[in-house]
Image (cartoon, rainbow, N blue to C red):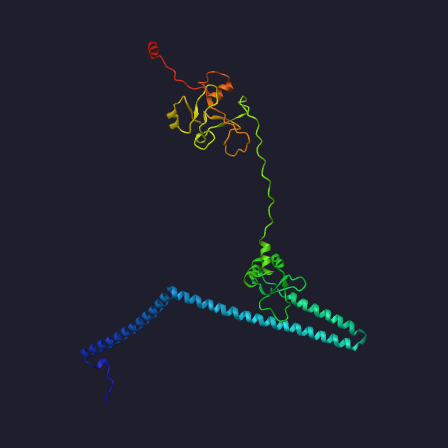
Amino acid sequence: MFTKTNLTDLPKSRQIKSLKNKLAENANQLEMRRREEDMKRQLEQSRSNRELIDGSKPKAQANKRAGEAKQAKAARTEAAKVAKTEARNEKERKRKQTREAKAAKIKDAKQKPGKSSEHQENSSDEEESGEHEEHEEKELLHWKEWVIMTHKLRKVDGTPWFRVAMCGYPPEKDEKPEWAERHHLVKDGAKALIDRCIQERANFPPHSDLLLASKQRPKKAIQAPASAAKSRPCQHHNYQESFKMEDNPGFCGPGEHLHCLMCGGDGCKKAFAANLKEVKRMGADMASRPTKDKPVHCCLNIAGRTGDNRKVECRHALCNQCWTKAVLGEDDVRGQTAGGKRKRTARTVNRSNENGGE
């Protein structure tokens, strides 16, 4: 049999060797554990990174949102079904209570023969009121959610009628049908709905006549044309009131009322020019070009003026110099313009006197 020996019993060299072996074995085990932990950590990190990368992709995000929306829609659908079932059960319960109360009243009335007819009338009234109350309990939807089910002509006068589901489509079996004319629906704000229904499903008379009648507008009263401006006789001697200034040289061009027209002043033979080229060609003494400083003065009845509607046609006009001479009554008006301002003239200075004075 072998006996367990202590390290102290072994030689010193062997003791050192065994200690080294144990230390190496412990180090190997620690290294293996560390490597396993590092590998687990790397796997977890890579898994989390992969999930993060996949979640950041647009397709993955879209799938996630689609899944969430699908779940929310399923939850809403389920809640709507539950609410509808509860409402149906509550409605059935109320109807059952109404029927039981009605049966009890009829039973009591049979026991009292004197009041049977009166009770039957009361019961019929109560039944109608109960139906009316049940009908009033239903909430009307917005006109955009209405559905026009069918249409027909009223037997009395042939007016088009439309059946409208105002509380939801399809209507329930006990729901009272709602019939209305087009103008009733227009007042309720459903003009677009009824017009689209007529165009798509009843685009023939007399239904289409409703659309034509709505599009027709009342004709505006035609106003009589304004009477032509009354012309007064020419007064060429009244220079202040019978003449009108014209400062646009374009009216001296072809087709205008000052074209090929000469000044009507005494002894003046100036022709009215449209531009400086014509003035240069005819000479400054034989041409007059209208400007803001020196306009042409036309008779109020001159022919061809734009916008005028006069019976009398005159061909009299004055250049600015002749008109100014006639108004002021002076022979020499060279120092004045149409505005009455005096021309500035250069003044010579005697330099020799000034130098001598110095």
